[in-house]
Image (cartoon, helix red, strand yellow):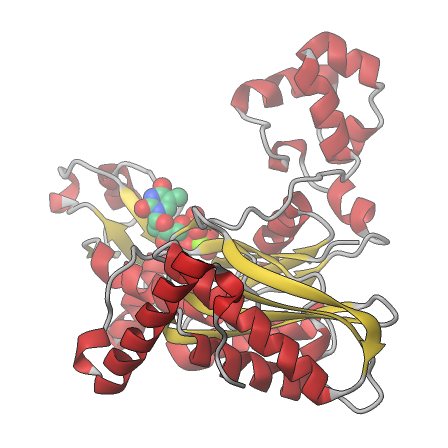
Amino acid sequence: MKIIAHIDMDAFFAAVEQRDNPALIGKPVIVGADPKGGKGRGVVSTCSYEARKFGVHSAMPISKAYSLCPKGIYVPVEMKKYALVSDQIFKILYDFTPDIEPISIDEAFMELTGCTHFYGNAYNTCLKIKDRIKKELQLNASIGIAPNKMVAKLASDFSKPDGLLEITQENLLKFLWALPVERLWGVGKKTKEVFEAMGIEKVEDLAKTPTEVLRKQFGESGEHLYQLAQGIDHRDVAVNDEVKSVSNEHTFDVDTDKKPEVYEILSHLSERVSYRLRNADLKGKTLSIKIRLSNFRTFTRAYTFSERINFFDTIYKKSKTLFDEFYKPGMKIRLIGVRLSNFNEPYVQDSLFENPKSQKLEKVHQALDKIKNKFGESAIHHGS
Ligand code: TTP
Ligand code: MG
C-alpha cells in the first residue's frame, strides 16, 4: 500500500504579500495586473481568501475583479520573490523525502511510503511538515494524504485552507463518492455537460454506471473515468530530476546487527555514489539512505544540504549519521543503500574556490577519479 501526500500552499502569492506587509492581513488582497481603476487589462494571478468571498479568483480579468471588489488591495506580481519562497518550501520538503514530484511553484506530490516511521505515521509526518512551513516561513500549507495521487490531491483541495486530511483505503470510497463528478481529473466542462444529461452528478453516480455505458459514450476514456470513480489510480510519484538520483545498495549475505559491518558497506557505497556523480558532472542536495530490516520492512532517512555536494567524505559522514540516528539495538539489517538526488540546478562549481579545504578535497577527488578512470573502479579506495 502506497502513502502519497499532496501539498499545496494556501493563496500562495497573496499569502506571501500578506506575510511581508502585515497591513494586508485580513484584507481582500488581489495579486495580478494593475486594475487601473477598472480599465486595466490582464488577469488576477491569485487572491486572498478574503477576496474570494467577493467572487474574485485566479485567471479572472482584472477589470472584472475590480468591479466585484473595488475596495480590494491590488498588488503587482513579484515572481522572483515567490520563486525564492518556493525554493525554501521545497527545501523543507526534501528534508522529509527525496521522492518529490514538483507540480507547480506551490504544489508537489511526496512519496511517503517507508519514510513516515520517524514521526510515527503519515499524519504526524505531514503535521510536522506544515508546522515547519508555518514556523520557518509564516505560511499555511494544505496537505492531503492518500493511497494514490488522485485522492491525495482531492484531499488537499478539500482540506483547504490550512488543512490536513488523510484518506485511507477504508474510507476512500466514502470520501470520493460524495464529491461532485467534475472534481475528477480530466472531467472538464464538456464531459460535465454529458454527465449532467446522463443524470450523473456525484462520483458515486459515475461509479455505479456500467462500464459498457461509459465506453459507448466516451470511448477508451470511459474506462479510465470508471477506474477513477472506483478510486483507482496507479500513477507513481514522478521524481522530477532529469537524472532522478544516483544510488547504490548492498544486500548482506547474512543479516547483520554489527555497526562496523554496516559502516564498511556505507563507506563503499558512498564511494561508488561519489564516483558516479563526479563522472556524470553531477552534484545533489539530498542524501538518503535506505535500510531494509530482516523482516523486510524498508525505511529511508534523508538529509538536505544547503549546497549541492558530491564528495565522498560528505556523503559517507552524513550516511553514517543518518544510520546512527535510525539504528536501535536488536535491529538486523538486510540491505543498506545510499542515494543522492535533488539535482535541480545545473552543475556549477558553487563556493568551491572560496573554500581552501574544498579545493584540496577537489584535487584529491580529481586524482582518484583519474586513477579509477584509467585502471577501473576497484583500483583505489578511500581509507576507512
Ligand atoms: P494555486 O495553488 O492554484 O492557487 P493559490 O495557492 O493562490 O490558492 P489555493 O491553492 O489556496 O486555492 O496557484 C498557486 C499560485 O500560482 C498562485 O498563488 C498564483 C499562481 N497562479 C497564477 O498566477 N495564475 C493562475 O491562474 C493560477 C491558478 C495560479
Ligand atoms: Mg496553492
